[in-house]
Length: 470
Ligand SMILES: [Zn+2]
Image (cartoon, rainbow, N blue to C red; front, top):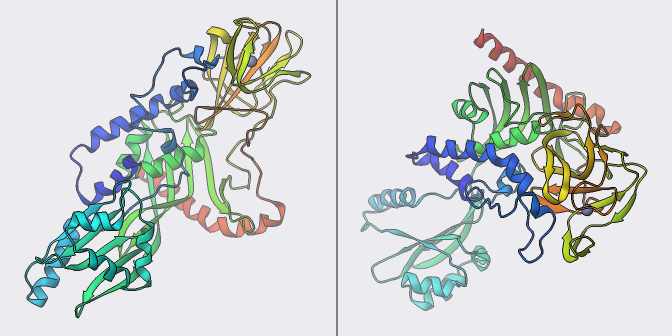
């Protein structure tokens, strides 16, 4: 989270190492595919077969820089866009100058875990009865009963330790202000003037999407969102080529006339190795859910089949602890076993890209497929692979990738199937699978009416970009 916040702070106070940070970021992205394939949340006492994939491999050197949660483009991030202390000080100086008052200093107090307002006031050196006085200063002050660790309170006190003011940013839209007016404390909440404007950016890739995005002035947040939208079709680590290009139309959120963050991507186009993909955001009027669709209303997301093999029976389910028939030990089983005749075709459960093909410890012959940025599936104990399957091959849902067998630690022919979300094993039989539903028929007209002007704007921008590059 701190990583994202830094991006916004960067706009106010120039960062000394922006390039370094970008390199870290690009590096983090480059390894993310591998991280997803190898991350497991098993605890150490309960060793899953999955752990044999990457024994003792530890990704702690990566996660602090770029965690899985930050990968998800729709993660709700608690952003704080409060005035910086120097800004508040400067404001106070103007007020003091106007009133011909002695200069006063705002001080900043961070809420620690286990803190209470009285502890905090104690730290600030404010007399206890002034806390009582403040709590009676108006309804708005109730906001202070819901403060959390890491929240910041700004406090203004005079030389006699009298509370003169308190400011607390409730969210990026509103703040609480307690002020001493004519001797009495008065509390009120104020709203910032929030405005959404549209913006656009285009880029041509020279070496990496991330550098191109930086050149185009796009924030890291936005570029991750862009990668999330097209991630079902394009692998942003391996598929990107020099000359690939993109145009994105997005929202910018302004507070009191100053840009504070990017909003949603409205529409975007991405040309990868000569193939152009287009996405447009649409909010379902009934569910109020926003998703990205192709201009003809198909979902950008791709769904999954529940089972990657037909004509099989489940011989072992997903469990965190079971007796292993060969190793004679208790182990967790983080997948589902499908028993069937040797040689039964195994299909890709969803559209994606082969990121691993080969022998992996207890798994025997295995295939791992990456689906979008969040999901991957593993197929183990295979007898053999489809003859055309290579690492990097794009596969369609239902396409035969391999044949069922008993390679590795297996008692008899069966497929061991794993489903991972952000690197975490999930039960493939019960996991909530992402849906890939097109725009519902009854909203087709609404979809067209709402997206046509946005798409037309995107097309104009793309044409301008082509003209500029020629
Ligand atoms: Zn298994």
